[in-house]
Image (cartoon, rainbow, N blue to C red; front, side):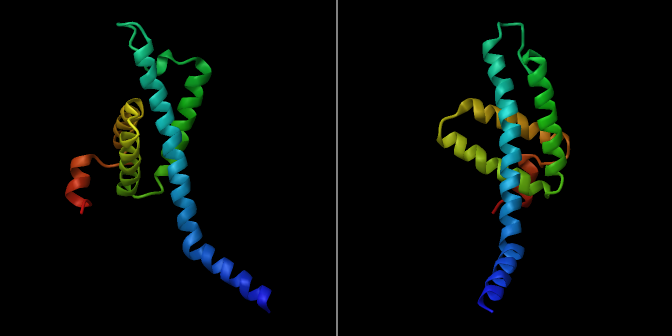
Length: 134
């Protein structure tokens, strides 16, 4: 009887809190992977000579295909979330990166936000501040 009640409690907990925690965890994983891609692209801009530009074209073909796949999968997953949740999570991560003085990471997050806004997955800061900020 106790085992049944414990199993019932575990299932109830998963249905109530676990799913939400799992979704937030997966949201963070996808945003981290996508930010890593844009941070890597920003680093190429520093390494390339003036006039060469850097950007995704400066990555190797394997890195380019991996980056494109990561971004496509991330956008597909993030479409399941409301746009303001994606923006909130990205802003939270940007605050942490700023406190750790990771300027390349911040630049990558800025590029990622522009990328996500362009694909209608996130909202721009002005719209976010007007609608959702407290």
